Image (cartoon, rainbow over all chains, first blue to last red):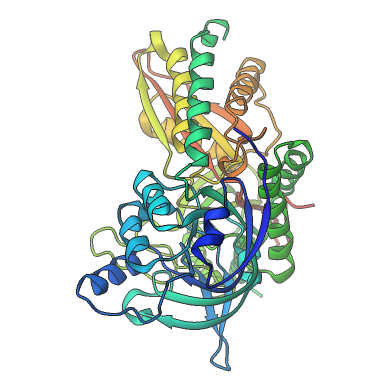
Length: 208
Length: 292
């Protein structure tokens, strides 16, 4: 697999044309609006949309972030984002394709990779899945300039609420699934499996 | 200040140090991995990891927003002045640290699906206590993240096939986990008489032993090196982007086994190994052990 990597800086709303230029391994830094949502917010958003209701924020062209942040309210009433690294995206695999179709978000950001259905939705609707370095929670928080809004906080709690962040130079975001449907992680894992088989076939335990 | 208050303050400090800074041995290993990495995308991940560690230390913020499940491993000197009261002090220290740092509340009742809100609950924090000679108290605190707990594996092998199973289990666990446990990971392998023994030894091998250290038994040390090389030849790399370092280290710990049993367990720690160790004298003065 090629490891050529170009670096982009995008501002939301992101156009379909821009997102379709991205290829796996490219690195993006993001300015503008980033919407944080994980398990429960996905479920709630999709159930609202299925009932024909509107979401509290229009998501077309924006970036969606799988995150359960640690935030604190300052005495002034403003939110302070303390730690906001990505959570494991695989948990959202069963609903993400629907989410992309219905909201037309252009970037889905998380960690650990996503599956075939999400890759198909990226191809069909013009989106990418990118990862923010897992565990780098303070680096992520330092690029979040302010909390614009938070929805469903009382119902879902701090980690699961729908957070609307304004970000500056948010990244590095490495493209793992591009709009051609190519999946960087599937390729790495396929090669790792081949490497594993070639080790095991030599029966290294016989020398232990 | 009473000795109980001194223990409380030490424990809150230990939790804060573990949550907001990294042990020197892990930082050294991450820096080495960064220097040696040739894949540009993988290198970018290590760069972000090192930058994050620096930022977290400066702002005293948690390294990762998953601030983990609290584990305490204590070596209690038989002549240390406080003994059974330590359990209660640990509970109080976890509550205080959760507010003070702050930490994300991560203790959820599995039947009522309620979060306790303060990182304490039934059997949580998890405490393992060993009584040792002397009058000191040694504390190791680990905040264990959820993502790296998921790939934990246990295999009850037959003794005749055990070595084969060991190789297969370790490599399959790493491949199936792929990017999910936030590599570069630290792998702990436990071999033992029973399932629980193997799992417990594996967890401690992953989270407590210093990265870069080898087992004192040369035969075990040699197998650690062979398995580590094999894991890194899989080229999953930092955060699954390929590259040289899938695991920073691999540690094996074992107990004697039952003649019919060969339990093999694999435990994984993410790169953000939140561990801090401290040692307290009987007069209450104390110091960190795994920070320069």
